[in-house]
Image 1 (tube, rainbow, N blue to C red):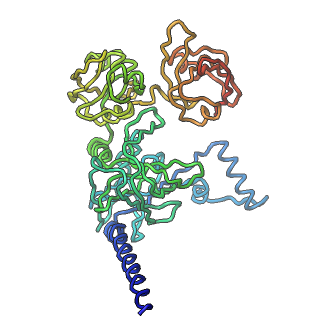
Image 2: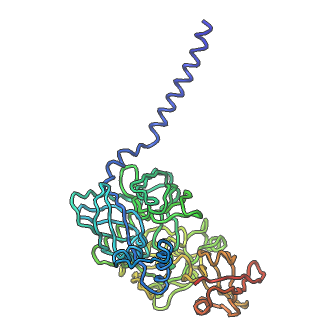
Image 3: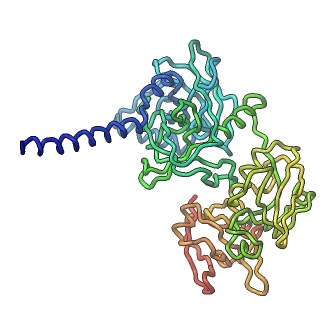
Length: 461
């Protein structure tokens, strides 16, 4: 009897544990059906670039040949010489229509002389570039194939942090590899190399590695909700910080590439900063939010509409501006010549300004840079400091490049001079930097927290 009394509680505990495991099994997603349904739509992108035949490359090629053949360097046929010049770039992509249109990243196919698409069934096709957009890092390709199965494009506007997502691609050249994770953050602003910020990224902890670029990010319904584009890494591999382009952005960009071959973006014509706690208190905001206008470009749509330096933009065409980086994203997605309602706070008063959005051209200075200034070889995002009765300089808003980081620059620094040349404004700074020597140690006079000191920087070739 005593034995039975001991067994009953043990059995009860085992039943509770079994029930708990069953509940967990029901909660954790099963990706097998999703993978099976979409396998044939995922492609490997092999973009082949060839080094130009110049003196430097000829010398490198001679060194390679001597390494393998010693003094008996053969006279190679032209086709074999071309093989030595090839610099392949492996990436991923996915089919979006049965007639062969494919989405991938711009950086995967940039400057490629030849693009080979390999399907999951190992068929290979030559691809042509319909259009490519550096600002969004998206490219639209086309192949001529039969029995092509496209993915289903979803909606990225309602995604939430914590949702399960799955990526399929070719990391490290390993074709058709699957990785799962969750959405870590929505609306991550990462300025691109041109100083613009046209994508509000989906951040995930999915194991994305080189080669995954251009591949799809799926939700649990098997819909593509993002295009894997970037990773944050100090090792070259995954560190659990990956960034995907929302599919809503891709729909806009790809639609324009398909119809026009180029992407047109809206332009406002203001310089912007983040809103500080002090400014938020003055404006009556519950917390720092919005985009502070620090400059209105002469002749821009913003000037014609009546915007002023000091305005805080809180909403653009119904979209809330949480941080300054949100403004470029929403303005850039707006079609030129569209009428937009912009909510602002001016001198503590809330008002709405109606503005006709302009067209962003390569010569336009863009507010579409939450980076508050144009990029430069120092890797610094800068703006005019506008200090009264003090030694003038430019304000370092953000350090985004290796040169600036290695020199020791920090956000909030006032850069007064470089190599003995004063930098009182952004325009002067740009002129000074353009004439600086490369690969030489240069002094930079900086003011930080009321103290002035020198940093040393070295601009690479």
